Length: 180
Image (cartoon, rainbow, N blue to C red; front, side):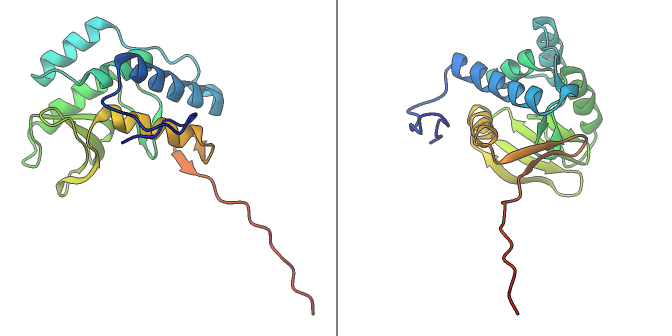
């Protein structure tokens, strides 16, 4: 179960559409506060999702469409950059020829060699790379992944570095001087 950052309450059941939209807005706001270059990134339009669904030969999860309708690329999931609808379509087309690729996978952040994907059949978020294919399970659902990521950002333990992504802050350590 996922913890909501502000109240510490445990979620009962799946996130609603409004809760997912609020997660997406919270994530976008965190990035806008972290870097002036990330202000005013537009969201995708309904026609973009129709093109994406046609290109992917399946429907993207609702939570991904909500996120992309709020911010169409440009933000980061740790060291991997969120893909825009156009980049998802292009990358999916490039990966179709890979023997390690499966048609039910939907890339959403990273690049052709190292990315996070959503399995459209199970809803799981997984790592994928061009050397080994599917890797570690990151979350059982994309909405849960978004909520956990939002909570991590809002806890105040993350920083954004341009063109590097999101990194954990180093703990402030007091250095004691030893006396001779």
